[in-house]
Image 1 (cartoon, chains in turn green, red):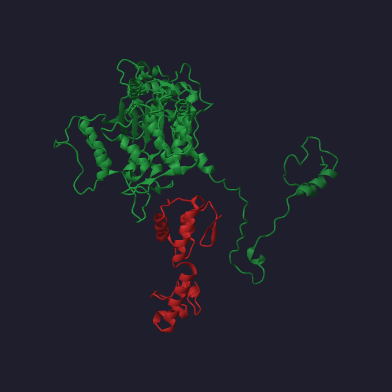
Image 2: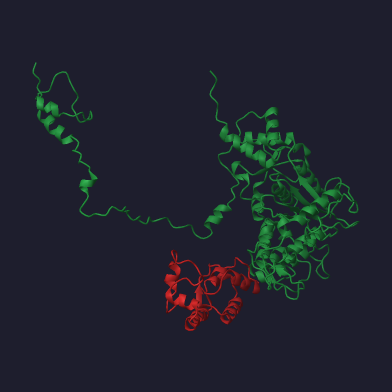
Length: 506
Length: 119
């Protein structure tokens, strides 16, 4: 049977896509017009013969010609301060994390409860603003993985809670007005800064006044203004900007306490203080004018450490609350600052009035806090200058606590020709028979029970999808170097991504 | 904007970098100047008190910087040329002065060393 398609047409037919060609059918179509037009229309164009030699124009250069890159319009760079704000941002809540049911809040009653060891206590929401004001939270800490901020109760925490109760004059062994001085050390990730945070939260609960220096480094890194104090010999330096910031922090965090206390001493050196003004009003004088910030701070300090009113001002006098002074990154105050004197010599931090004030509180035998309180000076391991003299001083303190006498040959001392800073060694020098003495508190790892409680908190927050049992906790405890809490947190976070539901074995 | 030695600096600029924009002031001199007036190293121009600006300007105007310094350098080179020293001749010929090789890499002297030297 002869086909309806003409032969020549078939030979020109090229395989094209199905959509273009009509579907092949058993009965050939008699209409030929669409076939003729479409096949030619959709045929691919003939390729040009590409021969670079023949295409080259007469006397054309053979060098490589590149097209100039067009300048791409980029988005505007971020405004000044925006990137820093992003870097310093502190996120305290993660709405994706599960809410832990039955989670207790830290309160004035349960800080001494030893039964709560190993459980994570939440920080009360009204206190968060206060803690933010004193910069207790640091940007690199893992607050943002949980639903709400909280901290684990460990042995050191309960001990500290007992001290708070004792100094506040509550409980059985009340010692109202006692001053406790502690230097807190420990290896990396042992929770020194969070220990300070817990101390601050306890102080807020007990209505203490909290004064903090969240970054000791900022006072010596040469980033704030410094002014020589007139008439001082050797020359000392004031830091008006940093003092003003300290006053702001202190007022913001302790507004409730400070606004309830009236001025009780005479301050002739400060203008604008009335006998009826509160301590909050007094501190606010230093906000606007940094030049008077240091006299205002000194005045505030004398008010807070006063035990009795000046003659003629007894009317509104109320007993002052105990104080908590917390400093983070102590080692930075033990080596030369980035400031220079007029002869271009480096300024020692102990010549900065601000730093000197807070270090003199720490000195053995000094009871500057008349109404009692606690001094917590923590070292840092994430940002730590190596200071030999401080290492020796801390070793000496450890030895004294172990009962080694300074006269004994085993007592550590600076090596000869090591050039240890005598001012640092002098600061930590023991003074016999005078209270209060400085103590060294070394934070270590959590116990296994505390580790279990801590990791259970991860599991209950939905971060950890593994059964938390004795074996598993033991493994993690060992892997974290014996319960180093920073390592445990890493493990708890790490397991989240690794814990993909395994398919059932078949 | 703050005037220091007749130059207007934006307030957000670092004072140290602003001082170093003067011909004849580098890292060494600027850090010493800051220390002399007890100004911290990361100070911005806008943070200066009026008195500090005046003091700074007073000290800078006593120093040999900018055109005075340029003139001195040009005069020194001119003296070398006039006394006919080897160094003077090299300056005039547009060749390296301090014994470098001339086979390659003499773009800078070719650019800078000429009869009417400019700084």
